[in-house]
Image (cartoon, helix red, strand yellow):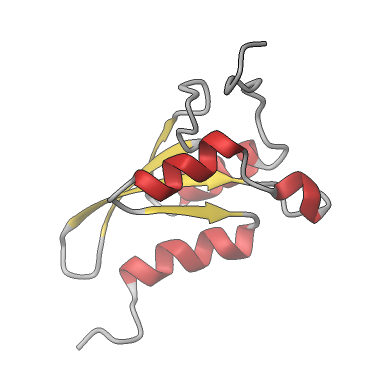
Length: 109
C-alpha cells in the first residue's frame, strides 16, 4: 500500500448509526469509500431555525478499545484543514446528542 493510503473499512456501528440518523429524519450520504481522510458520512438536516445544515461525521466504534478509535493520519489532516462542520460520533447517545444540538439547542431563544 502506498504511503497515506488506508483500507476503507466500515466501522462496526455504521449500519446502526446510519439507520438511527435516518429514523430521526436526517439525510445520510455514505462517504467512507472516498478516502484521503474524508469522514464516513455526510448528514443533512434542518435546524431549529429552519436552516439547512450539513455535517461531516467520522464514525468510530465506541465498543472498541480507545486505541482502535484513534483518527488515522489522513483523518487528522482532514479535520485540521476542513473549515466546515465535522465531528466524531462513537455511539447512539452521541448520535442523538449531535442531532438534538441542532434541533433543540439549549441556548435557543
